Image 1: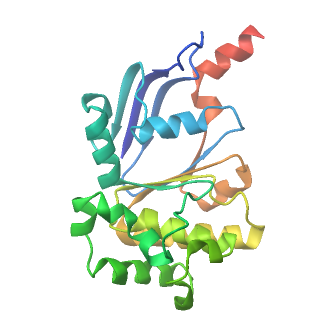
Image 2 (image 1 turned 90 degrees about the vertical axis):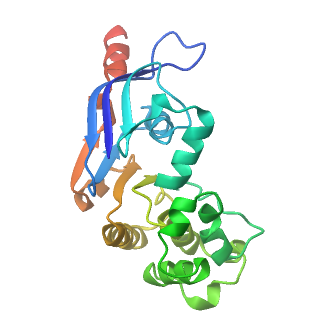
Length: 231
């Protein structure tokens, strides 16, 4: 699902790369926990995997597509078709209902629309039900929901249309332990149903026990080793 080789990325105006990764891979259908402290480059790596930015050198393929071969518009469409993204702050649209928030990705992707087994709203309702959100919430604005409920809406939005890769960027940081653990299990169950790969990112290493494999970004990132050696 993801292959990285000899990847280097440096922000403009910075003398040293923030990422210098020799190799990383995530297999089709695999659930991987990526851990690292703040400032270790997690968000930068996710932006590269999602095609928002491109590395200065190296190989980065997602779902068997070399992202460096695509222009910005093509990367945007590739992301819409093949990647579901759960943001730390959820990034839900406050002026839309719960159901309409979940179906937003379908407006930008024929691939995900064609993967539906039901109408968009029926598919959204099915996902929300499986994620434990009561039906009386579906037509409410998302601003009327609790943080835990909003998190489930964000997960359903990422999952609708069965994208090949789900990226979860610290989506449980605002939750208590019981709610967090239940959400991770629900998310993994839905990913297995659609055979989606899952890259779950957090600084909380206690969550690693829920995943097929855990990877430490600082141990992958030679840029951090160079920085520590120079101090």
